[in-house]
Image 1 (tube, rainbow, N blue to C red):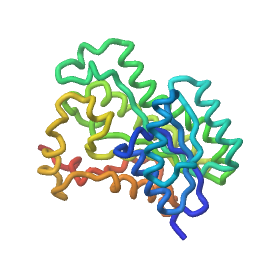
Image 2: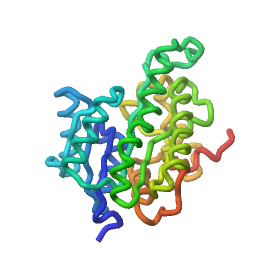
Image 3: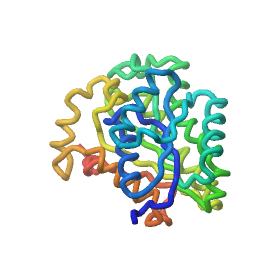
Image 4: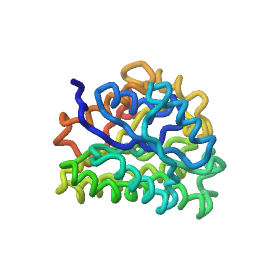
Amino acid sequence: MGLLTGKTGLIVGIANERSYAWHIAKALSDHGATCAYTHLPGEKNERRTKRSLEELNQSNAWLYPMDAAKDEDIDAAFNAYAEKFDKMHFLIHSIAFADREWLQFGKFVQTPRAAYLNAIDISAYTLLGMARRAQPLMQRSGGGSILCMSYYGAEKVVPGYNVMGVAKSALESTSRYLAAELGGDKIRVNSISGGYLRTLASSAVGGTDSMSDRVAERAPLRRKVEGADVGNTAVYLVSDLAAGVTGETLYVDCGVNIIGA
């Protein structure tokens, strides 16, 4: 038996097999969890997510369209999940968005109101929105674990990360307030601050082309973070081994966050 045998939950944010959500899905599944998924609406997005699931040998996994910017889409997805599954032991929130035009060094001060608010809406508020829908399902399950994905740019300035750093700060704070409020239902909420990984999202940030090599030079472990590192941490946080852990941001970046310069 795996650490997560008998646990069922929803993963939001698989874009392709390079995304952290994909590595989390692989690790959870390898440890016995049953995973359901959402994808952005549209045939192209559905095909892309399905290809990623085929790489996990999960071509028949439950999959539902959801635009997290729309409350009606979140409602529909969670209602559909509840019709298929009677319990939710975990929810993985691995989505973020900011207009790449403003993810360039020196352009933060020019960020327009709409782009600023949109980044916080998609990257941070959606965690709250999904947690609210997950709460009754997790109560029925005897508790649960909610995870979101952050990055060191939430705490320190990373050139070019700009409004996404602000949004990730809001995400981490949101996770703490949710942890405090949902703890009575035995629902734990934590953030994983993953190190730099070349993904569709990270490629939108200006100046990241050489970041991977710089990280490997500075990291105490003298290597780049791998998707499996974050996936294995997610297994721990979803499992009963982390029953006493909530409201935390766990760094999985080969130690880069402890280096001052």
